[in-house]
Image (cartoon, rainbow, N blue to C red; front, side, top):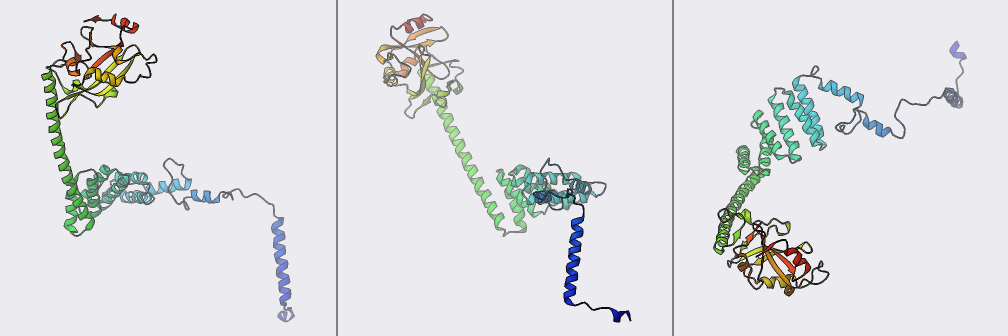
Length: 386
């Protein structure tokens, strides 16, 4: 009876009622007390904050970076020895290492693999994998010796580990241990005789050994040749009767090395024609300057070389008084504090053969002063003139 009295709504009435209910709901919401939402992420930085959340971060935290509390809690749970078996811990560290390795964070990967190795889980497969992976990380950092050491440790746990054998061969090659590299290549080729990379690496090692042996032969030949040249140099100095500081009995090549940087690598030498070439110093005490002559042949007339050096006035000779025909040349015997005047019409060899000339520091040196100048008179007063 009640159903017969119920009025059926038209479509227009339904739409009108729905609109009224929507308006009532909107009025209700607008009437609620408005409070700012402060517990979520800021609208202008939500992506940045989301990236920091352990569930959404795309990369591992940097070393020393403060961890999100949830991340810290997850790590404690993941690495808690009371909650994990040694093998589980090793696997967890390996997983972290692989993650960092994949993102080319090789140093972080090494740290993770090292922690896994420290666990000593007792599983040879896991131990081999951890050492092999740490070897790979070191390889990409070009730490070839460390990479080789880890590859060899991996092989102790798993002797037939192809990846470790291959890397041991490559790293041995990189540190020039070619014989060892060949041994690892042969070990790999025993199982896979047609492997192209192993065959190519082995051939590179064979070629490198040949080059190394050739270079060693050349080095020995050069050393032998140099020894003969040096022996002949010392012999010629003795034949000429040239006095070297330290005496003839203790004459060595070290005594002939120039002590001044300007003449470094210009030690006295013997030419193919048997002529001695000397490094020489011209000293001008009036101005406290020097000229460094890298190659002065013993058969040159001393005055000719002076003309070359003083052909144009040096910058320091503002009075333009240092001319070859208006200068005197001396050498000093440091043992007796005597000065000896040089005859510039003689050769360098004739001057060096003087009984009182002693070569110091492998470099003949000469004092040059303007004739009869106040500077010369003042300088000569300090010495005994021979």
